Image (cartoon, rainbow, N blue to C red; front, side, top):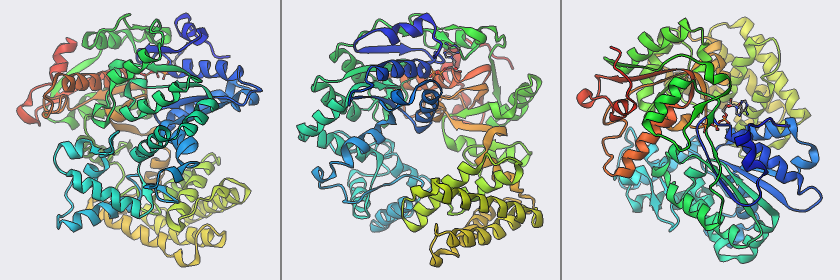
Length: 590
Ligand SMILES: Nc1ncnc2c1ncn2[C@@H]1O[C@H](COP(=O)(O)OP(=O)(O)OP(=O)(O)O)[C@@H](O)[C@H]1O
């Protein structure tokens, strides 16, 4: 069974709809898993299930693996752990696509990483004779379809993508047989809203819906939940932290989340205030920034962490990492793989990643890869690079996933049989070949070139690639080389282990944006670029925008267990440290 504290157990054993407010590090995942087990056990023998809807695929994996450790087969069969997008795909959009005529018949999901994404953006920009700028792709990637079917998001707000252009992009997307993540929600909502029998079917299937990170639920998701709730067959267990709501720009509406909880008459009597992650000095700092009621406290092993947070104001952000953070983690004996540098934007992280790589510090994050991740051979090469170094074969599932992705991208087919005996044999052949090639070519680039040719032979032989596609991997290595030349990488010194690092980042320091750090934890964290104009962003005008920036800062500082370094710098607009530094009351230490 899962061990819980009294405050964790209380909402688990309570009946009825609940909105659980939970502080950072309070074990939300543990509580949700315990609740899921309890509710699913009651469904054994009935056709109904319990859905647990989480924010990311990583959270799905974590809950599923915990379930497998503690739940019986019969219980697990009564659960469905998924993101809201896969929930909608599985129970609404795939089975009832014919009720949404705008959705292509056999649609695929367009992600930012798919090569078609950039091609479609280019087609739209071509039409108006505009050249692709530094941020064009990201501007398009930031756009979502709202409840009313209209585009919204930072790209629109900044005026870089007009509404007609966004709609043209969507038109091209659908014509090419794709929809994006926001469309999954939009069309699912449309189907549920217009077709009572579909909504009733979903509500009948799920006795309970457990929703994690409820504070960042978008208006569309809430409308979907409202429809399901309207059938009066399903209960809701909502878990969230209103102080960690950071996705307003992407459509999250914290007040709408609270309104929904009130509408379903959820009990607000439960709160988690024990933080198992961060030491008391870090908790005090977070409390100065955003006081909670009840107050957050360090509990368990975290209560014994003694280090106080440090604040520095330096010449540039890289110095904060090299001159303060790295020496500190070394003195404290914290492995690099358990450290993270967080910044407001990924563009802040790129020069730091490059510098750290140049001085031999293994890094994982934006700008760390010397070539573009979406290159056809990149993922498989990285997985194989990781296996070359290992005696054991724990990297095999990673190789299988890479073959799966490759077949999907290149051949355009979904080959689940990769995860069978045949796939395992191919993966093993690739690993042995990669190891053999490494004996002959120890330099990263030579290894990459030879491996691409040999791997293509194996993949064609085993039927994962077509004969006509044999040359693609080798061509992809040429593209990777061109990327590296553009990035002025010293390819003569590229090691196989440099490639392997991206498949197996355990020993690398993580460079992450504040937004992407949500839900993660590290032993040591440096939050950098804490200047006015960055946090809060210079475009912030309304109180709500300032409040969201404060919450973003709060998410960042609450990711660490032991060490916290905050840094502002002189390289930015007016050099003024973020107002939130003063709000924490932390003294200037240099
Ligand atoms: N009852 C408990 N006993 C011991 N450790 C616990 C307990 N509950 C949670 N923890 C530990 O606390 C840490 C934080 O848990 P978790 O990651 O679920 O936090 P969270 O509430 O999701 O945090 P955040 O919202 O900040 O992401 C984990 O390392 C977890 O193992």
